[in-house]
Image 1 (spheres, helix red, strand yellow):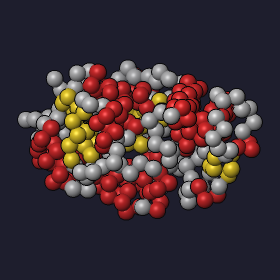
Image 2: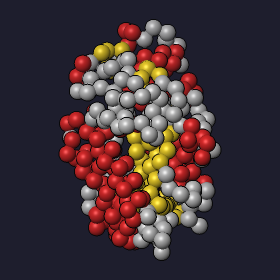
Image 3: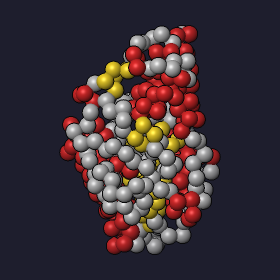
Image 4: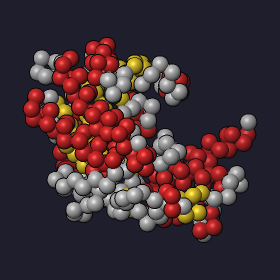
Length: 328
C-alpha cells in the first residue's frame, strides 16, 4: 500500500486528490498548519480516512518531522497562498509560503530520504499564472515566464527550484503547470465560485447583485477533479518531468456569467452585476490558454468535464447548498 503526504489538504485540490488516492488504495496523510486550524475539523468529518499531521511550509524542521512520521512514497505540494489578488497586499507572505515553501519541502525530502536509497517522489503545483504577460499562445512547457503578480513570481521560483533539485540531486521532482481549474470545492473568494454562489442566491431571491472586476479576462478553465488525475499520472512515470495541464480553450468571465445565470433562468444579467474598480489587479493577465498535448501524448491524460458542464455543476451545487440552508 502506497503512502502519500499532501500539503494544502484543506483546499480544493487537496480534497480531490485525497479522494482519488484513497480510491487507489493509498494511505493518505494531510499536512495542516497549527493545532487549531479551523478547516481541519471539516476535513476530519468529510474525509475520515485522512490522517492529519502538523507542518508548516515556513518551517523546514516541521516538514522534516512530517515526512519522517508519514514515511510517504509520494509528496504532493499543493500548499500555498493561492489567491492572486491577495498576493499584491501580502507579497512577502506569498513569497515565503508559495515560493520558499517549495525549497524547504525539497530540502526536507533530500535530508530525510529523497534519493536512490529511499526515492520519495515530489509533485509541485506550478501555475499558468507564471506565464503572465504571455509570449505566445497557446502556452506550452517551453513558453517563457513573465509573471504579473507576486503569486506568479513565487510560483516561478517554486517551479525553477523543483527543476534544479531534480537536476542537481537526482530527486524525482515533477511539476504540473496547471491552468485554472474549478469546482464546487473552490474557495468563495475565487471569481468562479463567487459567481456560482451569488447566482444561486440571486436565483433564490436571497441577494440582488454581485460585485466583480475585469469581465473581459479570459482563462482556460477546467474541472479540478480531472486535473488531480494528471498530478497522479505524472508521479507514476519512470522519469520526472513537467507538464502543462489545460483544456486548450479559453473563456471570458462574461461567458461564465452567461452560462451561470442561464442555469437559474436569467438571460440578461447586466442589472445583477456591479463593476467594482477596486477589484482590478495592479497588473492584469488578460488571456491564458494552455497546450496540454505533451500530457495527452506521454501521460494519456485528457479533460473529461467541459466548460458548460463545469459551470452547471458549480451553480447546481450552490443552489443545493443555499436551498439546504433555507430548509433548516
